[in-house]
Image (cartoon, rainbow, N blue to C red; front, side):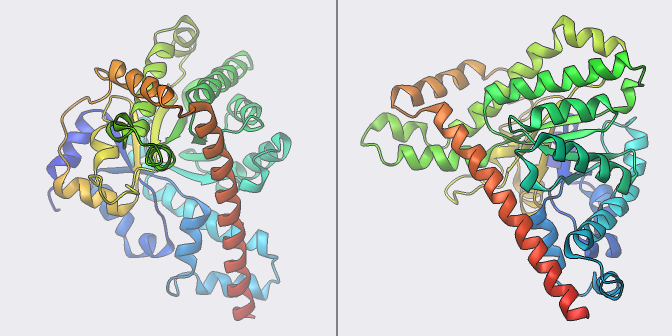
Length: 371
């Protein structure tokens, strides 16, 4: 077996779980995912509609299943779910050893509810239940967007024993609401007599998109202070989210749940590929190292970290004052934090909806060709 690159070993040792933000039938069939688990410290997988559409459009890995779905005259949405849940179920099986070895902490695979339901609580809950039943693996995470309407869906799913990856978190206020929803769900599960140790969750804080939006606003300002804040907002935002995670972990409400067997809802850093080529391509990994976190990376970022990432230990918990200063500096320049994060949430939901429609269109083309 190939030795694991030192930066990845050091990252794992620092308490960061490395997840792959990608999945395809080809990765599964060729053993590539299993190789990444064995050789690159990968202990989890996240997916989204764009990932599935890219996989479906490349090669012939899905041809046999698409043919059978076409022969059965399955409609497009049901076919999309059949194709994607097949991959996720398979990936769950590949990662089951990791799940067992880590006592359920890692070895997780995430699949997203239909993002068109992001503003509909009841339909989100119904879809989450359906996916949980359809995949039928204990190491599954159901991805639910952190919209206002998503919050009660998160609490309900957790209360029912459905493990949740809360996605599309941009703001510190919304992150606090997500944590409250998780704790409320756990309390309901405890009161109903459920085994809390079987329920898992991560809170996916999106990183690079914050810099993209804030930097665009800073670049319009004729102020030397603005230049000094370029590329600072996203990491500061994530670091302050981790501060809240620590504060909650020390609180009585969480301690009571932990004593009943509950697991912490770990912060997950998502959108960690660098959008600005002027920035170091590992910055959203090496500058967000802290215990009990997850970093989900596209393969390009994973390879960059393996090749030249410099892991400096914990780069979060001693930087809270600096992070506060970054947000204060942005406010002083007229960059309105609440406006930025609200815009990013709306854009994120819209982008996810578009990617889902693209996936359905791709499935429709494949079915038509097979018929």
